[in-house]
Structures are given as structure tokens and as C-alpha cells.
Image 1 (tube, rainbow, N blue to C red):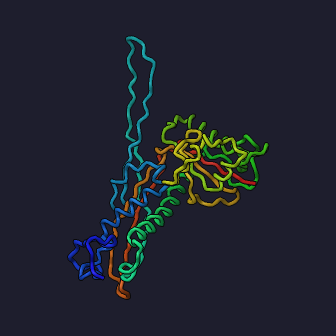
Image 2 (cartoon, rainbow, N blue to C red; image 1 turned 45 degrees about the vertical axis):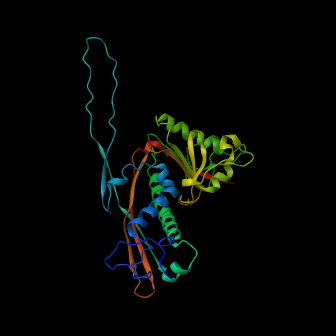
Image 3 (cartoon, helix red, strand yellow; image 1 turned 90 degrees about the vertical axis):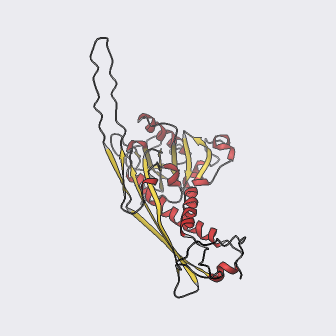
Length: 329
């Protein structure tokens, strides 16, 4: 099959080192250009990642490799005093307390693209392989970051963990103690809207800004949330006009939260599940694809494409997170 400059499946290669395949008119196989491919994977990744949407990603540009660390300076606390004429003003000595975000997790992908598939298939293999790699990385990244957030929720002063991973149910209207929040609409159950309201109140008490709040739960929780018995009206839920980008369920808010759906929350032992809400400033993440390589497969007529994705995550404000264990009868 002759190379056609207008063919959407190929890109002209600028590589002259002979590192890649030679499936197109003595050109190195330009189907996968490492730098271009890395950018495309990250673009797909960011469009689909829930964790990217609910965390502070300002530090992503400061990392280049596994083991890198980012020093994050905490915002100083300022004390306000009542001033009386002629009196000395009490000074507040600012401290530069810092938190270190370490890039300590690495995930890799590797696959082979056969020359025949590239030359004969009507499918755009670059887009297919790009999205597949991105979604696989997305799942691993989201699982890791969400787990970090759950483990970082404040457990005392204040206690922001509602219920516990228990098979028993807490009484309706009770949010603290041993037992799960049995969600539903019976007299002995916790209305899921009330759970969101209580989460919002706890964040309010910690002066967490309303703008930038989010809520994560799995599809099972959302199934209960939108049942016909729910207090939730269609007009409250963006008139049914939702969005699936980054797992966002609705472009509107519910009890001040942007609502996200994900399958990447870890399973519970006894409760039916768990959910979490918070503010975008609660957790910082930094991630990048450090390298992408295209190698000629010595055992077949095809190219090996492999890449390394590294990331780190850190809870910065544990009081800006609230989690809950729930049950479903």
C-alpha cells in the first residue's frame, strides 16, 4: 500500500535514526510518533479522568520523572484583633509551613500494532490505541487518587467520616456512630439528599468555599438518588440534561456540589458502598507521561508501543473532605 500524504492513518516521520518500523515506503513507521502520541494520550486522559476534575492540578507542570517532589507552601493564618486608638497593633508572625507532594506511583502500558492492521484496516488505529491507553491509565490514576482522598478525610476535630463500614444500620437522621447510613426513602432510612445536605453543612462549618465543591459516588448510589420516591425533581437535576465528561452527571449543582459518577471507588467490606464529597483545594495531584517509545517488534511485522505514566497525590486540607458509608436494603 503506497503512502498517501492525505491518508488519515499516517503522519510523516521526521525521525532519521532508524529506530522505528519501516512499513511505509522506507519511512520509519510514523503511525506512532512518541511526542505526538504522548500528548494525545494525555488529552484523552484529562477529558475522562474524574480525579483530574476534582483535585488541584496546578503543580502538574513541575514534575518530569518518577521520584520528583513538589514543595507546596501552606497559606498562612492571619489573626484579626480589635484595634483601639493609640494602642499598639499586635503582629502576626507568618510561618512558611510546607507540604511535600511526591511523585511515587508509576503505571506502564505496552501493546503491538501489526503492519497489516495499519495498512488494511478502515479503523483509525492511532485514535483507537490512544483512547484505550488513556482510559486504562485513567482508571489506575482515579483509583489511586480517590483512595488517597478517602484515607485522608479528617477523623477527629472535626470528624468528617459519616457512619462506618458495618452491616448494621444507623437510625434515620443519625450520621455518627458504628453502622452505615441506610439510604432510601422509608421512615427508618437516610434520604440521599439529606446525606448531601449534612455533608454540605460539615464543609460550611469548616469555612470551605461553596464554589469548587464536588461529590463522588458509584452508579448504585445514583440509582437510589433518582428514584421516583426521591425529593429530587427533574428541574433540580438540570432538567435531565446531563453530561458524561469527566463523569460529571449534571452541569447543574445539587446541595452546592458538582455531581460526579465513577466506578473507581474501592469496595467496602460490610457496607453497600461509600461516597465522598469535598472541595477542589483539598487534594493536589501531579501526573505526566514521562516517556513513550516505539520499537520494532523483532518477532513479528509490527511496532511495539510502550509508555510510562507517573503521578503523585496528597491531601492538603483534610477538613475539606467528607466521606460516608452507606447501605442499601
